Length: 573
Image (cartoon, rainbow, N blue to C red; front, side):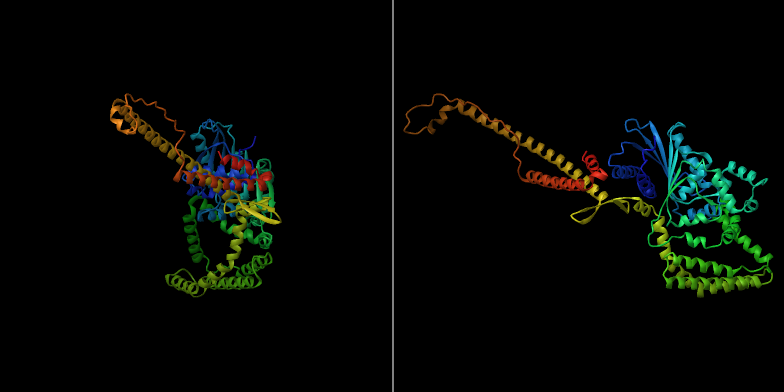
C-alpha cells in the first residue's frame, strides 16, 4: 500500500506549498493540505496530520523541510506514515551550497546529515516503530538532499521529486563511505583525496556511480522539465541521474539551456571545477567565511610568490563567453540585438579584468606602495567603467533569469502535466466548453466562495433560530401575562356582579343575580414571523438558492471527470 498522497499532482502541490509553511500556522497548513487533497481527489482526506518543522533543527547546513506525521482520525497516536518534504533553494547559503556541494561536489553532506538527524528526532518524539513507512517529496536542491540519503541508507520507502538538482559523484564520495571504498577499489586508489579524485576521468566516475547506485535508486521517481536550467547542469562533470525519470518540455518557445551549457568544452568545465574544489573543502568545514578567508590568503600568496607566472588565459574566456551567448540566442532567450550587446559588454568586462590582472602580474615583489597603486587602479576602473557595464549585463540577463525561474518552478511543470485543468498562484482551474465557448473556472476560489456562503448561511440559521427563540419566549410570556390579567378581571367581575347592573339596558327590568365566565383560550402556534426575521429568512433562502444553482451548474459541467459533486457534498457537511 502506497502513501496517502500517492497522486502525483497532490505531491507536487504539497511540495510547492511547503515553501509557504514558514509563514503559516499548523492549522493553516493542515487546512491547505486538506483542500489540495479535496480538489485533486474529489473526496476528503480523513487523516490526522501533525506538523513537525525542521527550520530550527539544522546544525551544520541551511537544510530545511517539514515532516507530516499522518495518523488515524479516530486514534491520532496510531501513526500510519511520515511524509518528509525537503525544501529547495531559498537562501544565499543554499545557492552557495549548490555551487560547492552539488556543482563541484565538495561541499560535504551537511544537508543530508542534518535531514537524517531531524527525521530521527521526529521518530523519537512520536515513538515510531522502524516499520512505519517514510516517504520523501522534494524540489530543486531538495532532490539532491533526499537522493543522497536514499542512495546511502535506503531511508525512504519511496522518493518523489520534481525539477531536482541531481546527484554528484564527488559529493557522494564524501558523504557515503561505502561508495568511497568502492571507488578506491574500482580505480585502484589507496585512499581518495581531492587530487586523486580529480585524476579519475569524469565520464568513468559518473558511469561507475550510476551503476553502483542503480538498485538503490529504484524507489526514486523524478519528474523533470527539460526547460529547467537544472536539467542543463546534468552535463557538468561528476553529475549523474538516478531513479525513474519522466521528462516534459514546459517551454515551447525556447529550446532550453542544455545546448548552451554543452557548448562549453568539458575540459574548461573540468578546469573550473578543479579550481573551485579546494574552496569546496573549506566550505564544507568552515562555511562561507572560511571560503572568503582562504581565497584572500591564496590571492596574497599568489601575489607574493608568483610575480612571473603566466597570466590567466583571458582570450579563452572571451571565446567561451561568446559561444555561450550565441547558444542562448539560438535557444531563443536573447534577441539578436540583445545577444550582440551582451557579448560586447562581457568582452569589455573581460578586457578590463585582463588589464587589472596584467598590472598585478607585471609588478615586482610585494610592497605596500605597489598594493596601494594596484588597488587604486582597480577601484577607479571599476567605478568609472565596470560598475555601469555590470548593471547593463544584469539587465540583459533579466529575461534569461525570468525564463530560468519560470521553468524551474513547479507551476510550469504542473501545467504541462495537467489535462483539462491548470494552475496559477496555487489555485486550480478547470477547463471546459459550453455552447461553443471556452470556459475556465477557478475551482479553488469557487469552493472557497461556496464554503464561505455555507458558513454564512449556517450562521444566519443559528442566529435566526436564536432570535425566534427569544421572540417566542417573549411572546409566550406576554400571552400568559395577558391571560392572567384577564382571568383576574373575570374573577373580580364574578365576585362583584352587582357593580355591573348599569350595563344592562334600561328597558331591561331584570336584575343580575350571578355572573360566571367559561374560560377558553386558544393555544398559540408560534410567534408571528415579521419584520427583520422575515427579511432575514427571505434573504437566506435567496442566497441559498443562488449557491445551489452555482453548485449545480459547476457539477453539470465538470463532475464526470473531476468529481466536483463530492467536493461540494463534503463542504456542505
